[in-house]
Image (cartoon, rainbow, N blue to C red):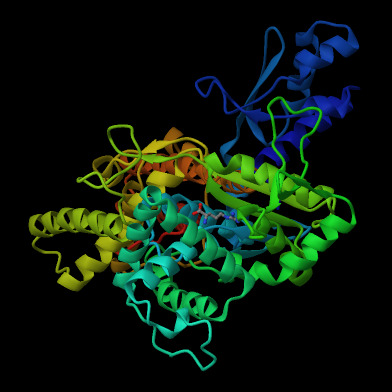
Length: 595
Ligand code: ARG
């Protein structure tokens, strides 16, 4: 089934062609003057140049041709040559009925399904997840879900940071604390213990301590660099320590991501790229792509059209150890080999843009990926506190993701509890209140993030995000719950909301507005997909929720006496509910039964 706007464009285009004008002039857009009309076509303005006449002569003819069409209740030709169109309620009702019968509400899958690897999350093992990783997880998960909904095979890869200096820092600090452990004994040939020589909380304390030391103590830093290199070169004891670190960190990461309704198909890390590095480096040397510069092995990636300096991509440091770009490139090697993806999408802080430009150029130019492999970097802005600076704890430290989520859960729980008290008749149990507040809190966090354009910084404002009014996640959930409750009341009167019935032509402006909002579903999802922009879905559901609430306030649904009319309202409610539920699933959150 076609998108509404495409159906309208088709009819208008036909009118242009029948009047002897080129089909390209028939393009229709949503009106930017909703006070005047619903849709508009400005084609006559452009056509006038080609056909050398006044634009309104063309728009007059088109309006005349369209006047008989059952699609419109009004088509006006407005000087100097615009076409203003209003859809007929009958046509819109027909469109609604087709949407109602389609389990994708008229949103067709992409006819050319692609394999897309979405590289998001990017946590660094042994460091607790902090708010800096929140955006990557939230946006990446949504982009993956949207791609899947469009019919693509989207695979999420967490791409753990587990091969860099942070590993060397941990190893060095551990060695200072417990030098007698067998991991540090180079002569040791036996099996390493199953049990790690540290707990998760120790690990989380070791890293910041070590990182602090390395900033002040040159010797410590050099030891960490050496340890990193030795780990990468395969020193047995260090590899065994890395395995312990991963075994301890991954379950904790999984749990934290699960709390965010985020999951990954692949739990690969930088270290999984390591086996591919030697051959890749050899290839880069053999084919003459890489050369030595100041001791390091680099690939030049600057291009003539660059407006700013793009430095070479460093493949190996002078001591032979690999860097961030090395593992990213070698990761592309195994991804191409194992999945042959059509596209790879990366999510990271927008300050990493240069790194991705360097990697992507290297990968393309050296044939690590194919010429037509689509490589996209989605750089996101910073989540700031109310002071406009990167979000911190009250004490000014880095906020752990876990604590942030708990804070919002608690805030939501307080709100729900107040509601509970004021509605004594609602027998919500403590358990349900906790569950419900978790769901709303997640919606508050995710919607608060996703409703912003990805590249922009935004302010994490817990009061605004958790509000049940305005452009917020809780408002969307509240709308869904309200619809569910009306449907339940309808059913309680002994009527069946799922009985066969048609959506009838709308009776008033607010119902028409709701219908048009419903009809916008496919367009919203498709543009969210092509532009990799979940905020388009947020904008869409906010419009839909507003249209629904407007309709609800102006329409007596449950006391409507005309049964067919009432059932038509019910069908519209169901469509609205189902579309909202589909959309929030694409954004990665859920609605409670009641709130
Ligand atoms: N671990 C990195 C960080 O914390 C993010 C990884 C992004 N993905 C990638 N393939 N480089 O900054």
